Image (cartoon, rainbow, N blue to C red):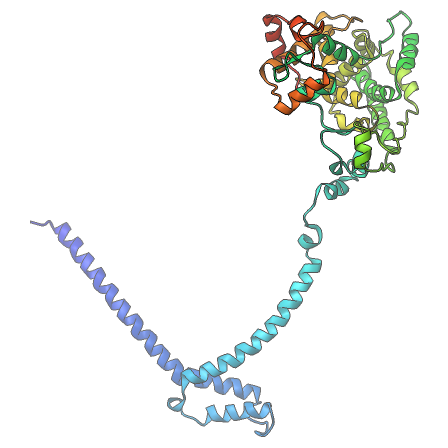
Length: 458
């Protein structure tokens, strides 16, 4: 037996269904009645008011072209009973006429608005598809070095050849410096470790003068040994490195940073109007490294000697200088240390790409966990000096050789065509040749595993 609550719920459900049917039928009937009423009376009254107003209540003569038509329509609706009007047909005719007029007016307004928006709206005025050159052009006021890069048209230059090529990978670095040997024509390439060591040693470049008690004399001797590009880079760096000394006052600190910023801006001024020609295919074939034509102007080093004489004797700069034996390892260390007082990116010296590619890659490698191969020998020597806490003139580039040999043994792969090219380049070396790979000493497994931790990238 059903409970009272269940019966009550069933009754409520049936009652709601009946109410829904009643409302549906009643709603349809109400719509029909409303339609009949509107069609018979409201429509007639609305037309009487509309045409009466347009014809000023029938005052215009009926024989006039336009206003007379309105008077005729007004008199027709005024003297005709609503039951005698054809509601639907008249509505269709009037709707077509009115909608056609409205569409023409709206079309004119929309066309005018579209033309205005296309020429005045901020999105259409400022928003547009940009390529790399357009983006560089827009950013020139913020980043002065982009003025120079924009004139170089780097996208039109080869990516893997010439002065502006990417940093060499391990394979490209070895092939460019002819460090690869083959035991047989299609054998596995082997690194010529003796030649690789000589190449890495050559990355160290110029020695610093031996430190003495006369700091000013040491600074003057150091300046004499610098190239023009090294002088410019080092002058901007030592200002910031001197500012890392916590013993200087605020005025000295701010003056050092300001002088560094002035030098960086000064270096770019001479290159703003420099625009070298793009290399032709014949030029590329005759000059694989494709030097710039005309050659770039030398960087403006006005005032750099005074800056170096002042700051090379500063305690913090002196500490870094005496810890390294070579100019470029000193630059490498100073550039990383000077970032303690703020960001100092390699982009500040991007003009080096036109004048000294090797120094540019040294600057670009500073601060990276792994250097580029073209600065790997310098990086290895720098790490040795830092770990030993002493400067040494003897090149310590063995770890760079071990790392490159590890790449050859585990990562680098050569195609058949590259092996043929290497074999032809070494003149089909035989096994009894004194420089054959089988006669070269190999590093121990322990040294190889140590090299992996600081392996350079390419």
